[in-house]
Image (cartoon, rainbow, N blue to C red; front, side, top):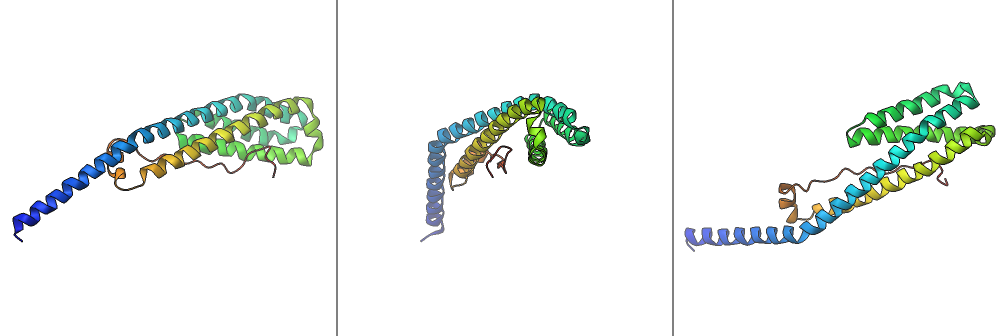
Length: 186
């Protein structure tokens, strides 16, 4: 076999491989777009839920202060985390603020178990119900986003379509798993 014949065979194999990569990517592209749009929609739902919960947090903080002034530091921490959440422009900062809010809300939930009078205090009770409801929506939307991101990221992984996927702007999405939320049956 001559050198020119070897080069011709190698070029043919390379062209066949590139055609395979292109066909693989073109068949996956609509699915990738659909799943990426779904993840974007779930993220938007998560942000709306966070915004709704952020609106209820000042009332909850005031109710905690009104019940027992000794818990002002907990209420201040909640309002500070809310402020960070409102100012955060990047998803990582937003999720970190949401996690901090969730941590503080779990402390408040534990406080209601330790001080039964708090859960019966009318200003607290009405605000707490709003916060629990929106917190469940936050967790639900975040879980849906994370599931869509996992599916999308799995679709990006297989060879050979991953070669062109990155070139055409299909990059992995960050996954933000939910650890737990207030009102969960533990």
